Image 1 (spheres, rainbow, N blue to C red):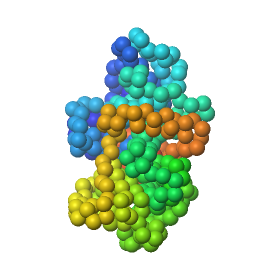
Image 2: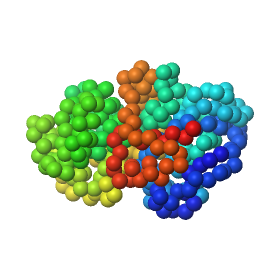
Image 3: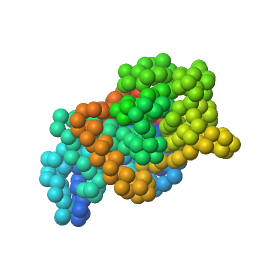
Length: 323
């Protein structure tokens, strides 16, 4: 099979298209023929060695995919030909991937492979953060930073689906226009406007929650714009730097600062993860939410796809069409 391989830590341009042995399923495992894979910002960190969990090279990056079952191991109920989506730590930027059957989900009828690949990681991240971590309720003002990116646009979609009032913050008119088409009630260009002041103006006093997958210099002004008792959820640092928050801001307004990592959330809070996954699957299968796919690349251009995400050019999700 062909795969894009990180042979040593480096940049997206260092990935190489290689022929690798076809995987075989062990007990409880499934081999999936990958039709589409989605790009996430952590994929950039994995290949640079900058993620908090390091994968020793060589490996094929890519964490989420959709495709068809090719072969199954003992104890697996999936049949060859079944349409499935799933996630792995790495390995999705390849024609075939092997993983545990319990890491797969059947694809709903009427959903294509690109949508299924694009849905899993970002929408679970956003829904866990909104539903369980921030406890967002109908009518709450929710600020989403990096709102046109993968996690950001998923958060806009899901906050709207939960009945919240969304302020989308991003860095260009094109990105903000996209957020408005997805239901954002208000937008802020945080490269050209005062983020804190605009949020306070829009909300008439302060937001109920902030979701921040960006970090950097946007975090503190967004936190300052929270209302009393509000919740700030940190999800990642796509801006490239980890912000420092003055703790007196937390004290003075009784703000809660929470972190959420999709890798550990189901372990730390299993009951809420089961509930959230069930609700999210219903939203997806009913058509209430669908990912926005802003760019597509063939497998041999996976490096270009990663560079597109690394340079914060992505609108919504970036998809790699594998086969």
